[in-house]
Length: 264
Image 1 (cartoon, rainbow, N blue to C red):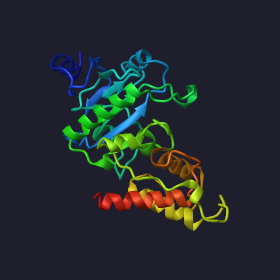
Image 2 (cartoon, helix red, strand yellow):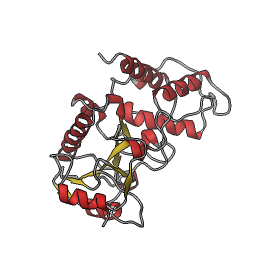
Image 3 (cartoon, rainbow, N blue to C red):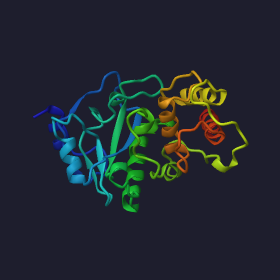
Image 4 (cartoon, one colour):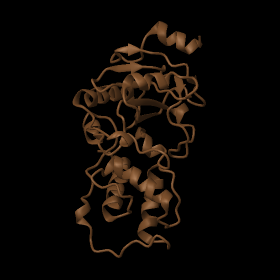
C-alpha cells in the first residue's frame, strides 16, 4: 500500500469536519509547494457519491480529490492535504499550470449539467461552506485563492456551475465576491462582430488576464474567449452566462480587481 494512503488511514483526517476516510491511491507528491495555496471547488458529474468515490479510487480513471461532500452534507476525505491529488487536470491560474501541486480539491456530489443539474441542497451547501472555511483558515489562503474548476480550466469545464452559491461562501469569509452589475443596466451598444477585433472584447480579455484567467489579448470574440468569459460569469455573475463581454461583465471585473487591491 502507498505510504501516503497508509498515513491517512492511520493518522486520520486533516479536518475535524470529516465524517469518513476512504483513501484514494491516485496521489503524488506536491511539486514546488510545501503546502496548498489554492482551494478548487468541483462537482462530481456522477449520479451518486458511492459511484463518485469508486471513480476517485480507481487507478484506471487516474482522478482523485482531497474531499468529497455528499448531498446530505457528509464529508469524506480521500487524500491528505499534504499530498497532490489529481483533480485539476490541464489548468492555469495566474501563470501557474500545475494546479494539482498548488491546491486542495473539493468534489461536491452533483450529477451536473449533463444529468439535470439539480440545486445544491442546504445540508450540502452548509457542509461545503464549513469545510472550505476550515481549509482556508488552516492553510492561510486569501479570498482570491478560492476558485471554481471552470475558472482554472474554462476550455474544458463548467463546474460547479451557476447554481453554486459563491455569495454565501464569501459571506462566511471564504472566497472573493462583489455584487455583480445588473445585465439590464446595459447602455445601447453596437452588436459584437465575431470576425473583427473589438475594444470591448479586448478590455474584457485584459481584465480577465489581470485577475488570473488564461486568455488571449487580441480583441477577438472567438470560441475560446467566449468560454473564459462564460466561466467568469458562472462564478461572479451567474444570472447570465452567455459569454458576452458586456458592460455588466466588465464593470463587475473592474470592481473585483479594485476590491482585490483594497479589500477593506
